[in-house]
Length: 276
Image (cartoon, rainbow, N blue to C red; front, side, top):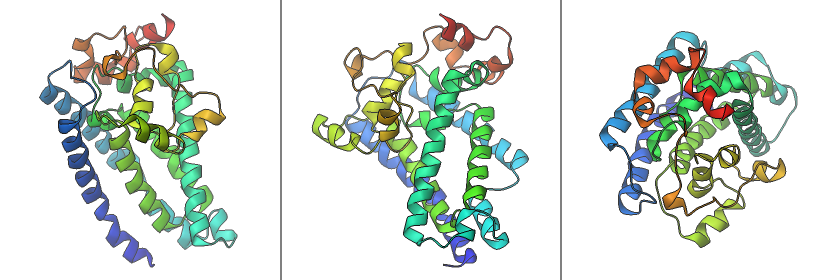
């Protein structure tokens, strides 16, 4: 497949994101896991606003998109897969595993580095749990992850088609794992052998720090089991699990200005939370 064809299909990524959003939203409305504690329209507006800020940052501060980086690497002969002949399927699988491992490690670092936690706390401060959480990130955190992922794509010389598929898969996965959806226990158990499920990731958003500091995986669940960060069950039923950060009151968690500015304050509420 030529680079021009891949670029043409890249326009489908937005369609995939929109279709996935409506599918999970519909699922949430029919089989919710828990009841919201905050007004849903206000939360959704806030989380979409944070996502919009991130998009502005990408446009101003990122020199390349993931797909453009992969195409540039192929055109310039950069990266491992441009120097060593690898079957396209193998290259796709290795790229998928490498990006997912990077995201696991990056996520774990966000929780263990005091400076980075300030930004990641924006994501965890949401007192509710639904698919718009997949949009709720401080722009600085989003940019850092994008730069790290761009570097990995260039280092690997990742195939453009693989990057396109993985990008779309990541969008769908983020919506699914953050969905306020109720899975049958047997299905959740079966999926968890390979994939991160909403039930598994919901534990990660608990107010209990020992639960928050676990289940870092993005797509594959085995990283958490292999690296000792897996929590199988929460301390209480998931429908009753307290979500958010104990030291961030809902009023602050629902204030866009405070969420953007708080990481830069000397006495931020997120730092107090980690020290409590």
